[in-house]
Length: 100
Image (cartoon, one colour):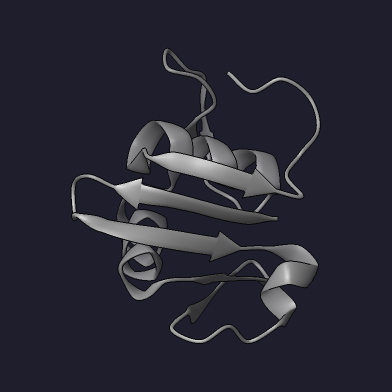
């Protein structure tokens, strides 16, 4: 999955890659690992993700919940981006089905 977006809080665009898309080293991205899984993200998003994993490792699956553990499952990461970081613009190769 490859997600692009714009984080209004930090005033910067971001890219996050998971799965086979994260296996490719993309310029200007950093690797973040958690529970044996790897994602690649632009530096500001990588820092936010590391901070969330260390201090508040949860994601909202919808605007009103439920709150679940933050993992590198595509559905959970996409929910974290949408409801915590914000600004999701495009998703390529993301999880199928409706998103809340």
